[in-house]
Image (cartoon, rainbow, N blue to C red; front, side):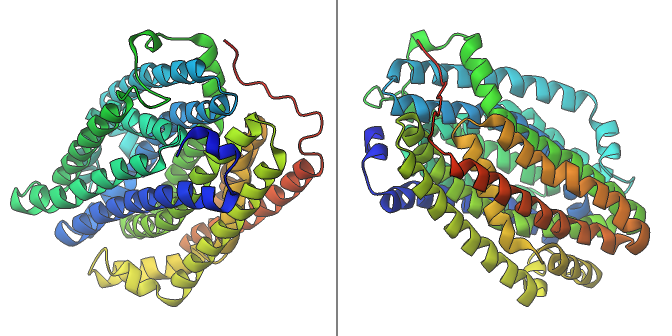
Length: 452
């Protein structure tokens, strides 16, 4: 689809065309993370699942730095295309490469240098540390590839090619699913094999995305003159990307806190249960991310073109679809928790603990879709400070105090109950902030993107 059609085609058709590939891609991403966990849990053991859960904060932090560049830059690209400023959009593309390579390398070096103390701080024990260290060290070695792949794939989607972005993600998932059993079982590499399969899959998909962006027939494409660092582009894209960065960084901090509280009140097995619950919830969250990613280029383009009715239309439709998705997740979590948990392990104790936790954690899940859409909408239209507040409030302002307070009275159950409680409070705050914005939306709106 040509970028200009974002301002003329029917919103429902656009959201379907942009969201469906993103949903497939996000679902596939979640599934390949689940496949890793399933192979590790069934093939290596319950403590390997706990070790994998310990690595989640560091993986979230890596993702946070990737989104700092990729999401902010792709939002800029969408708005610039809405203004027909194609040369500046391509300069943003060049800066995606420069920033992702720099930040990815720094994260890799620091992570590998201080790996053991970091993992102990994240909740590892002497039993789970070897599994965690073996897995995350390989992931960190491929961190630059991961950053560049996600950043450039976001750019491809924002430029009007959602299907090509989806194909790149499906390629990653397909390769990972094939390589996992080869490295884990056939080559007897255990949890290390799962990490190698993940990195190799992303290398191949990055090559695919680079080939797409070398096609000069596309509005957004590589050329020699775009590969130089531009401080204005970098600062603007990083300011927009600050919201998802802080959200992921806060998630990293929260997962550390959850792991440490579970270690104190339930031990390694409780951390393993959280690892399973996290993967299941991640599937539905990623489906919602598909809707918000589909919304992003449509909202950004039309906001840049000052077509505010179209912006509001895509927001309402996205909220509706996301709420349906999280409600389905809620029903699955309440009606069939043991079935889902049993995919990851055959350890009876771990199944019982994880199924119990899943029911509690997903009790307020229907409102999560609305809260996510609202936060991402503020980001899509460049209202970075509001997006940052919404992203941070759920995880830091509400969840951290609850994680401190609830376990004092209810132990590990207090950890589980703190999550849906914070979801509910954050959704209420998001509702009032969105209502306030929409009352005066488009009136005296000043749009500051970038100028040549």
